Image (cartoon, rainbow, N blue to C red; front, side, top):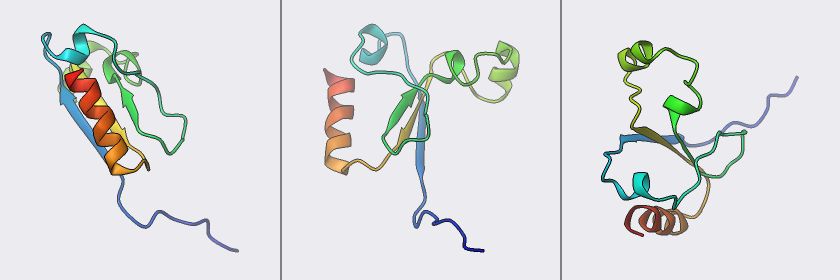
Length: 91
């Protein structure tokens, strides 16, 4: 029986809390989405998406605040991703 191909390098996921004054919380510059198993980068909002059904106290214990965003880095060219993140953060 043959095995399916495996990734040859580690994947990356970055989480960061936003403050009310963060540019990305005051305007819709990016798109929040749930990963559907694609290879593109995804910006998600765990408290209202993947962990929305979890009680706030349980999310807090696990470090998932209402201001936390998660960036799952995909296979885009690094320069393209950096440019998009710069546009999202700085306008």
